[in-house]
Image (cartoon, rainbow, N blue to C red; front, side):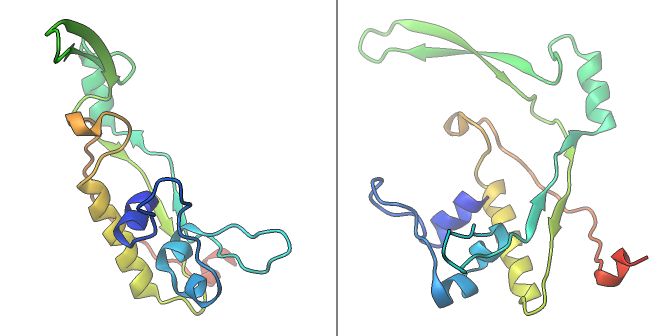
Length: 168
């Protein structure tokens, strides 16, 4: 998600030999991507940005586990898909097999967004939503250009807590 936001907001250089844009000074304080994902402190520098996002592991739903367990083609949550690579010069076929999570599998996970004093909560939430939308139109993992890794993210609930919730 961070890579997609960096790309959209122009933090990725056109020349692959250049480094990613590194924010500093006022720009670091105002960069929503840096605020969401954090920037590590450099030795001898007081510039840093704590991360505000936590992505918890996503586990398959009970329905998905039931489907996987009842299918002979799905082993431990993955299926094997046969593909063919065709040499465009010789037309020779070269079969290969890819292991992947079956389409239609559902997972439940959790994203935590921490808001600190002085943060613009609405802007941070909107930037996170933007990242989710970018991810939905992209892919995770390899072979995305062949249709693998498409994800759909649905926010089914939100919960807000403040400092008092942790003082009990």
